[in-house]
Image (cartoon, rainbow, N blue to C red; front, side, top):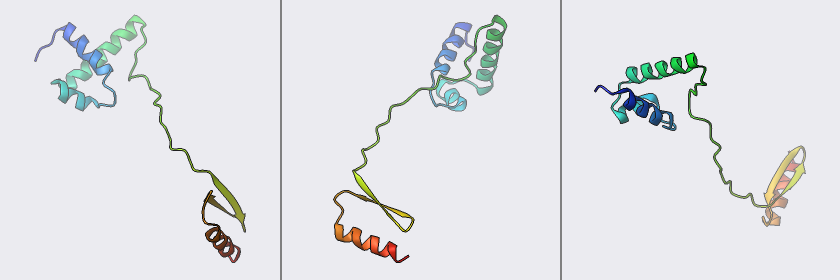
Length: 105
């Protein structure tokens, strides 16, 4: 399919905003041959370099907010070089047995 310069500018704008999609995936989704896309990208980069404009090779990195679950409060007990971390509220008898076992090592 033959595209006009205006159509290619539009395709390249869409390509620049594609996100994590690879060139191959983009070409399949938009009915573009990979070699033709790469030719137009190279042609655009050369034109930008000749005109002194900056060329952006890929979309700008974005910060993504992630929320980690809050860790329950814990207590650390150092025994014979080992650190035992237990959640507050853990059965005291169980913790005592663990400490006794670590002291035997």
